[in-house]
Image 1 (tube, rainbow, N blue to C red):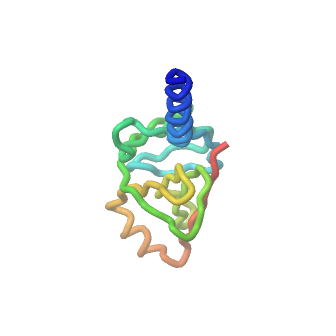
Image 2: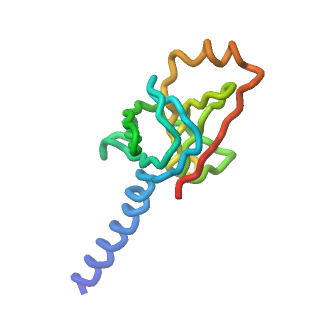
Length: 134
């Protein structure tokens, strides 16, 4: 009986942990060139994952033609649910990675210190593009 209870408890803990692990990694096809961490990456297939199990502030994005490391801040979306996705700010014909969503209401926002001048300069042409993971 004790073995049965222990096995059941272990299964519940494992089941609770699996979604968190699965949601910290995603694969996407990005149809446009984009800028992340000051680096421009070409359109293509990318894998995105958390770089540390202890903290969700560090992320890596890797494709066939480039790699970038990302530092983020946590962000919440209490009203709108997001799929596993990346959100890009489109300003004119340029795209900037701005958010990573790895849960329906919890995500990560990139630190973009130099973006204000670009956004202000082309404020009338900005919009957000969200690309869902496969």
